[in-house]
Amino acid sequence: MESVRAESVSKSFKDVVSGKKEIVHVLQGLSIEVSANEVFAIIGHTGSGKTTLLRILSGLDKPDSGKVFIGGIPRERIRVGTPDVQMVFQDYALWPHMTVYNNLNFPLKQRRLPDREILERVKDMANRVGIPDSLFKRLPDQLSEGQKQMVAIGRSLMTRPKLLLLDEALVHLDPITKLKVRDEILDLQEEFQMTILMVTHQLTDALALADRIGVLYGGRIIQVATPDRLLNEPENDYVRAYIEASRLLPERRRRRS
Ligand SMILES: Nc1ncnc2c1ncn2[C@@H]1O[C@H](COP(=O)(O)OP(=O)(O)O)[C@@H](O)[C@H]1O
Ligand SMILES: [Mg+2]
Image: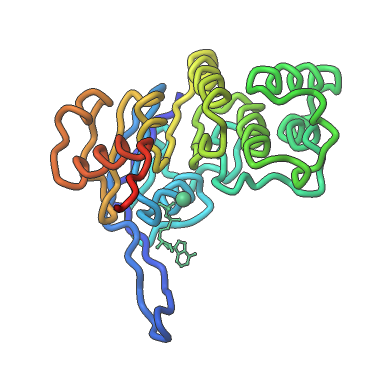
């Protein structure tokens, strides 16, 4: 139950392009407001700055300018990695030397819960997000991409966070697993009274999960709308093109004759 507010957040990176030093302006005065208990999705194309934004909200990176508040408190006053704010990373960030079970139980071990309770909570969460017990002893590099993603999702939920940040968290799941995990995330969101901020390039995931969707383009949010409204009343050419392209993706490419 934590609101999120970003005010005029900007972030640039120094880069070397064709041997020349350049500054890449990724976020350019981006503002968003996510209410407590809301599921908010940010969509945008690859390289639009979605991961950059989530890293700033999670406290891992600092904006060049602008402010971030979580539950009304300035971000820098909240500990990075607090159990109340958890993130699922695009590359999972599982601990490579720890088994699936130990990856899942780590957040609880840190809180020194009794072993019996830890076991029950790990089994319960694994079951809910669809990780079979048979994977518990495996190391992350013995898992498929989708399985790693499920472990990352499970781990992020172990501490019942108030704010969950999801970075392309469903992208490697097959369609059937994805439906189950989407439902489970929404159930857990209600149960834990979580605020969820997800970023994704997949419009379908945003439409399925979010109360509101923000479109990231040119370093800013250019439209915020409910899923229905976004589909029916895109406010500009980019949003229209994004929706069109997302609809066209499932179609087979026609052969050129
Ligand atoms: N640490 C970094 N150093 C230099 N450039 C970066 C760094 N992180 C991200 N970028 C650049 O910033 C842009 C946005 O990246 P990112 O936030 O990962 O996009 P997205 O998650 O939307 O695909 C990209 O052009 C990327 O190459
Ligand atoms: Mg990304």
